[in-house]
Image (cartoon, rainbow, N blue to C red; front, side, top):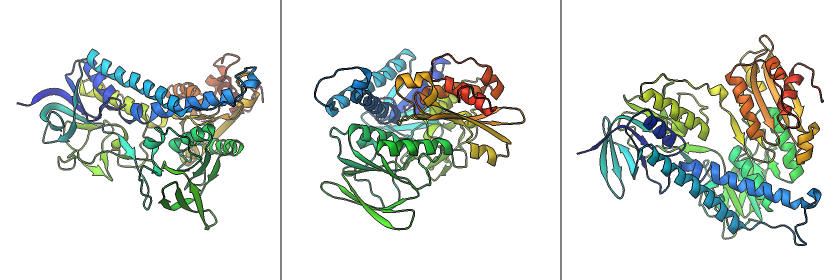
Length: 471
């Protein structure tokens, strides 16, 4: 006889596990099917957490290498990085956090069923693995996440042509690495490897680095990368990659149409992520799939009654659903509340913050200037540089700026784009500002403590009205 639950969730990543916890908090009997040995999905095991751990080590190395400027005496030997110790610390962080989710499952009476799941009819999930079994549920949630993908003609061998999964586990610093793609994954690893001592080249198909960001942010990052000695080629296509015993040869078609061959120890493919839906039996069960993505409505319902989906695997029938851990969590909580009979709180996808932890950091939310103009707004903008802030000077982190995009008629803030120190933290204020639909005037009248990095946000608001105090 099949074990019965109110909700079965397939996948225990940053979409699945918060959905489970919230549903259990609301009194539902919940099971999560996860085939990996640990909970947390890509984010905790191979993505957000381990990559940011490497970035923190890179930042610590940056400070240590400039120790004399801070009056610190570290000895006569040059500061070096011990990759074995870096990996050990990274792994410890991941272990603590994944075990924390296990604790939360026990605390909230969420059942973790280890194995691979497949839809096997209305309200039925078949689990294969160490303990094959059949489960029944009133509601099924697909939250299987995404995996690294390549582009046609570039075959990932996970030895010389690698993904972020291999990059986070390196115990030797490569002499050289080419990174294909300049989205968040690409520029974050560019920061890590450059700081660790590698010769880094970034290749981007589109005209700008971090092409989804506001153009002012892209320009500022390009200026910083040049200063750091990170080589980058925009409007460039990788057409071939030939791995060998000790490296890889990469053919790139440059902006002028000429083909340049680049030799490197590794090619890191960071061209995006694809949905994990193969083997789920979703299409056989009647779930509409579009290019591998599960098609859902605004409340995450699929084409099959009582089957929902969230996170990196979903599409609303048009491109552009962000693949972000915190968005998956927000979707999961909203879905859990709907499944428990609570009011559904729709997500405003214009108000989803994006964080990129390169050096300098990027934090953005809302419309870019270009997007606001395309939507027909009469736009007003204001920018303010970090370099004139006392707090930025004290921290010796003076690169970057804050840019506010607003509309003139009602003075509403439409977007905030930050590149510079603590940008990934500062964007929280901006996200709340958009959530509350505040005006530039209200942001001006919000007192920002001194000396802080957040003053740049307040000053950018002043600048939007043509009245910055310190610039």
